[in-house]
Picture 1 (cartoon, rainbow, N blue to C red):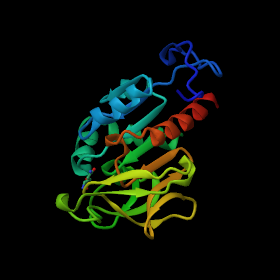
Picture 2 (cartoon, rainbow, N blue to C red; picture 1 turned 45 degrees about the horizontal axis):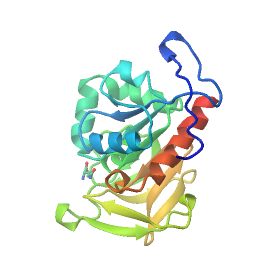
Picture 3 (cartoon, rainbow, N blue to C red; picture 1 turned 180 degrees about the vertical axis):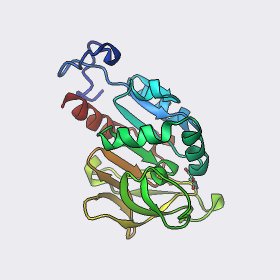
Length: 219
Ligand code: GLN
């Protein structure tokens, strides 16, 4: 177990309690509209981190970090709007809520969807994406890629009807590339990947995100 998980006592944000430095339990949310929610929850369970499905404002207000899963970005946007969570989530991210979007989750975070300009998004991350840019379901593939921030061991990246990043803003860091194309990016507390770490056994990206969440909660 990585030593940054130092869970000893719980705090209750709703009662105005603050996390105690070095002694708090973070709670992670997985956006629970649609998609591979369960896979992310399983990953977090493996890491011993309390996690919930986020389907309401109350849930959104109780978490320290959010994962937006892969799935169907159009459906997720539709449901976010229907539940009224779209604007609230956008605001939360603007206010610094750490967030990690995988695949469709990355599309939701992107400023620009070049293939579908009419599709709305949270516009939290200055990247442009092309939906299904690597092809359709039959063109799904796995490839080992280096992700230097995670150490030397390559990461098995699984691409399923994945969005292709076609532009990265100046202030966005590229954490991994496949060939010449960025596939994992970061701007401060916002992470996104074209691929799906939650369906591998490799917990390193989730651990990295948890570290960021913990640092943000301590501030
Ligand atoms: N192609 C899907 C979309 O555009 C994303 C696929 C995925 O998340 N695996 O929303």
